[in-house]
Length: 260
Length: 354
Image (tube, rainbow over all chains, first blue to last red):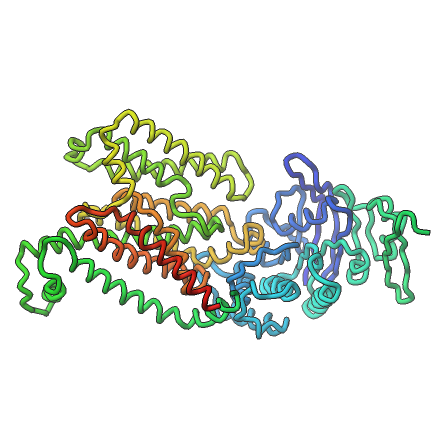
């Protein structure tokens, strides 16, 4: 149950600006989805919040700025699910999820009973108990995604960052993964930031969309406000129709250039 | 194939206690056999009896003369103990290097410790070994030790200067560059001093034959310290298996962990190399054999590498004494000659089980 604030966040790689002056505040339990074309800076914002890239400006949890030096403090408050996690094939699911407890374990100590109880609970919640002894290398794409989310939950962080959580999944598993995140968010009051390419799914699940372009936020609001064909044409260079369902769902349908 | 390792690893957890007991037993047997076999000295079966006799409260007549006991205690024993220390050190350092660089092919010589030690030793040999041997402190292990440390230090400085990134690739490349440069200097020095080529060559192949209790005392503190530090990092090495980025996101200071592990492993390896030369192969084959047996978690791989490395080198040292009796076969040749087929056999057995 925590708010997440970005204040004047700027990121540069070797002098090339990736994100400039990004500001946003998420209230507790909100799901924010970053959208935008490739290279817009979505991943960079997430990676900065996870402490993986240097940045200027600040990232704050409950108005408390994250100290740049304490990786452990950050990991207790922010869990990060990368786009393509590195999965050690010969590690058991249990060992893998246990890695999420690292921020709570002293440098040279080993995990406590409490850490193990947290893992049991997380595995139970995600229906992974029967997988506990399986090797990560034997799992399917959808199962892998679930154990990465399980590892993030084991961090017991109030903020969850997801970089392209559905990129490698089929449509069924995409839905499952996002439903899972949505359920967890409601149960545990997680504040979620995800970067996504699928605009329809983004609009369907997020409370709010932020459209990024060349490192800055160019539009923010709910799906109806942000997903408009003129906006998409301008920033994605895409020719697309935006269809509004009766229930408020916004569907983005790409169009062929010379279709009639 | 993964299914098989899967089932295998399920058992691995419960089998670890059993396996370490077996390993301890094997190590004891290997050490005993190591003290029993060799040219000259008492009949082999008398040695354990005499060893028992030396234990407090036990008196048995073994029929070993004081001269024969000297051969056992002053020549064979330090050699076996040194094999234990060097084998354990090279194996655990190899496993740690593989963990910290996330590359199964690296050995503890990756960052230039071997080349640096080789250069240091070569320089001492060119100073005429016959005179330097009688110096107050034998400069050979010292030069090898310092050479190895300097080379790795150079690698680390270069690697960090050229890249601010967290990537370990620059460090590995710097290691390759430093190794090439050092080897080039060594070759140049050797070209100008043809007379020591044979001595340097035999040093490079590694040997335990000249081991003394002095050598054991020399490296014991480094090996104990280094093994201790590496063992303390076994859980962190498991965290590092998910890559630098994710380990950082999990709250780990990977630069610090990598630096500490590399330093500890290098210190121990340099000490081992200083007294035994370059014994190849142990640092790669033992950790991989251990992984095939106990799975790939570093919590099990590191302690088991220490045990199995010690066993392997003590056993490898036995044929090196008797194969070409009365001459010594370099132990580096033995480790590769017996280690490689054993490893291939093990890989094959695993594959057939799948």
